[in-house]
Length: 433
Image 1: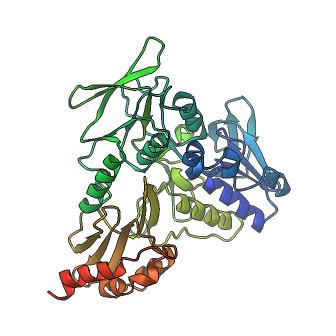
Image 2 (image 1 turned 120 degrees about the horizontal axis):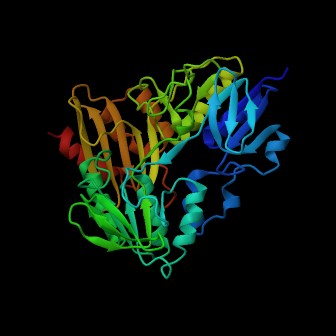
């Protein structure tokens, strides 16, 4: 009898797992999602609202792809998982049997019990439904006179950019004293503060949301700031204070959970034939200093590839390698390779360079005892992942990296180059001491 693999979640993790299981086997595969019928690129949602893409453009595969590859799709919400009988129970009342189960349900926006957080016009920016909600309540600056964004992470800055693209005034509440200062070193965070304000965005640092106030119809009309009691009139509130694993439906099952679904290095849960991958998976302990949960696109894809091997008989450990990530802060592109913490740890030191135009900078982290290169953040200068990944693996020293920076640059032809200025400052600061 054909083994039935059921995958809950049609994001990058679940779809990658399905594609690789199909490449490796003839098993029966079913993908379940309540969000959309077909897989789409979640990171591209913002560009639909900004007019650069249509939703159709965000689907990496044609709609016929799934039938051709014998991957069944079911649009429904899983209510409970019964692991002893290997049965899924759906919100609509039907059931489905599995032989092996892959939980790939991703994340959901955090809510912290704010009064009014469920009013009409309050939304996150994670699901396709959030985009539809935003289009309804903020189609233009006539309907939406002002929006308030609560939370200063990457999703918050994306939503701010989206609204700004339609000339909708934005108040941006960031509880930290400087934007994303738990992640970015001081010089970088301060530069992004200035960049946000230069886009005429009302950035409120060190401010928390106290309450969302609704009108008589349950629609958002204002918010109140915790620290000052100030009331700000608005038509939309974006809650972007981080995300957490979307695992409410298994809380009453025998599957072990913490913040996410607990897995070992093979992405196996405590229940045989049940796996978890992507944003909802929580490693029992971090790998190579990485966080137990990583809500990052590329790690989700890697987990999907890894679990497919294990399910198809080639039991494989998840090995994410060196940390890297990329994002965009309005007009400034950001990349990070290796580890650059907001504040250097005991054995670490930072070298920081910033261009006079205040839109480009780098921070290099290294071991101050051994000079080993540990990581780099780049803003406004594109650098090659493969080059830094190699240097980190080879444990190159920081002098080598600084002298070979041009090899890593992949800005387009005719762009200005800054490696000479960076190296000059580095030499002035360190080598010639």
